[in-house]
Length: 318
Image 1: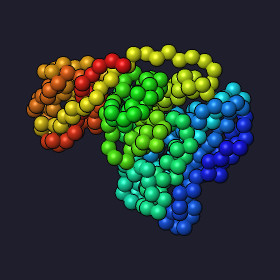
Image 2: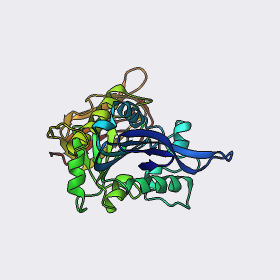
Image 3: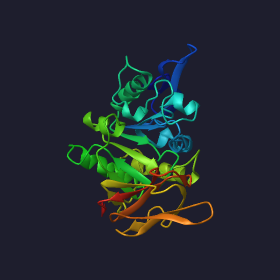
């Protein structure tokens, strides 16, 4: 019998339940939706979580599509899933936990006696430590972004190679291989011996079907490659960046991009221009470095100095 919160499943069974994380402001119990998929055969344990940022819904869509496709009779090992981590932010469609105004994916490994976000991080981190590998499903918030997988432990970490292999197996086509900020799950979990990656499934308001499909395929790639399911997965060559160059608006107005997400750009290539409402060009911005056009703001209107886009830099193939 394998349990996660109130969910318990014997070999060959699936069960859902809640993982307690305290109480809400009206005194009601707060719990994260969880699922245990316990394979008929013994094997590794995979941990999957979504929505540690409350407005990043594509990972929730992946969990919703993935679980009905799983048959524990065909599975070797166990999958532990937390469908919504930042439950307070999810309920109000915000990025940060509104209870303590915290970005939850900066709170790991957490503190069971701490703030709301620290308690949620501690509860989920305990589950992560039961796993052999972990997937923390994200997206580029509500901005526009390519599909990519992030390796956040840093190139000198003793599990860097295993995390990079996991990212290549998930196979979004692009990898950001850059040490993450303190408190990220994909940085904290490798310190406890659990290879962990942070798939960034595009960027959208609500659910994007293409991004959800990419995420489901990524998890299924991992399940096949690590022996949970029969089958093979082919690791394609992927584009890796180890840095970012961000660009702000040199003037206020409306942004007009001149390259597409995923395009290779060279130093001096025009990235965007800013116009007034009558179409008059006020400013143009060109790339400072070679790289890949990685991310853009969603709305066209900008003030001077406001974030516009990012280019992935120091690019190679892995």
